[in-house]
Image 1 (cartoon, rainbow, N blue to C red):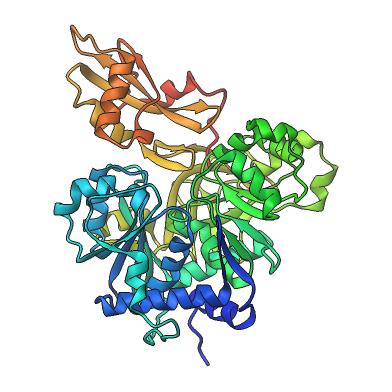
Image 2 (cartoon, one colour; image 1 turned 30 degrees about the horizontal axis):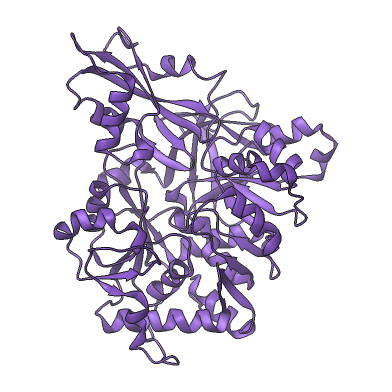
Amino acid sequence: MFSTLTPLDWKRRAVKYYPKKTAIIDEEKAFTYREFGKRTDRLSIALHESGIQKGDHVAVMLPNTHYMLECFYGICQLGAAMVPLNYRLNAEDLDYIINHSDAKMLIVDEEFTGPIEEIADNLSLERVVIVSVAGQSTSLKGVDFETFLEGVPENATPPEVEIDENQLMTLNYTSGTTSNPKGVMLTHRSNYLNAANFMYHLGVSHDDVYLHTLPMFHANGWGGVWSITAAGGTHVCLRKVDPSHILYLFERQHVSLLCGAPTVINMLINEPKAQETKITTSPRMATAGAPPAAALIHKAQDLLGVNMIHVYGLTETSPFILYCEWKKDFESESTDEQAAIKARQGIELAFNGETKVVHQDGEEVAWDGEELGEIITRGNVVMEGYYKDPEKTAEAIKDGWFHTGDLAVTYPDGYTEIRDRAKDLIISGGENISSTEIEGVLYQHPDVMEAAVISIPHEKWGEVPKAIIVPDDGAAATEQDIIDFCRSEMAHFKAPKAVEFADTLPKTATGKLQKYRLREMHWDGPKKVN
């Protein structure tokens, strides 16, 4: 009587019970669940006929369109693993990820083929499928997505594949704090249980209309790609984050739920139309990925009428492990205090397993809101490990616990609040940026003798990288020269947004750089991050 835990079963259920309901709205296109099911099945057959089998890896670099949703189901129901790619990465990063992931095929949006064109000869891909986009062109050789499906009969049935819930479902790459991205192995089971958390704690229902503001390549849209289908809700696709258009869609499509980093919230509350647009849908919005300031949460709820829900997690945990559960007792607090509570990371979710804050000796910190420790977790949503990297896996998972590297306190009610990072990770607009990677680029500049990169507060992006440089004798480089140099060597969003020149950098007696002293000059009190 055993039934495999896989989010793929939710597509079967949705097609069975909601065949005529609108499953996806993508600009002027719309698909019912029956139509969505047929398209994903045809994709599976086309992939199978082109040689993709159980255990193979297929890389996908698409924005939030119906094609991306179709790939999650069409690839994975073959027993193959999907490798979602961040289309903001540069050619060098994509070269590493595609080859390291052992992807046999790439499905790519025509708008984002530029970096792939640069590295095409280096890739070990067997085939490329291109989603055509009006007004775009590419020199990349590949078959058109719709043409790829044309040879498959509309009512054809995909091959039956036995799925093991512990087998790899998605291989999600994260830069973390090292220069080379790491492949996070997430199984059918971990994706299923994370999506169950998404459904339960975000209150997903059959009548929900979900706006995909969060990139689906970010930890599989935090699970939204699965959970909305599970409930039979409606997916509304969003190719680009345009605050004016988002406000329009709130009313046009009656959006009731969305997710996004605090930078998206900031964009919405600073959009001029937000002052004149009366939002009547009162959507729920889950936020994570950067420090959601209490003031920002307050503004979003007051100006936009959005009910903010704070969640916390990492790609390595599928990603949810904490959730700021809202209690009726909080309603008696002032609006400022309520916003401050919502800025906390919160408590364990129902299906993820155990999470706690501990000292170095493994003992849990006191629940006093003062003792600082590291967040560790174990259970149903923790990754299987880093792909082809047992050393990094052993560093992250010790004695059965995944170590997040995030330093936090626990309040008397059990709510966790992050106070700092054990590692110097910068999260800008929901994107992970490695300070050491930037430093590696800076040291390539002839005018740089020493360099340190830290995060500094930013009104729009939450935090951005800043470089503090000790210049070489006779150096003539300006701040803009350094920024331009970095932008020429790495993805633009990773490059420092500010540069400061200094005579020395603070160090310990053994020569170790003290970045916390540099951060103290830019952050008012303890740096709070998510």
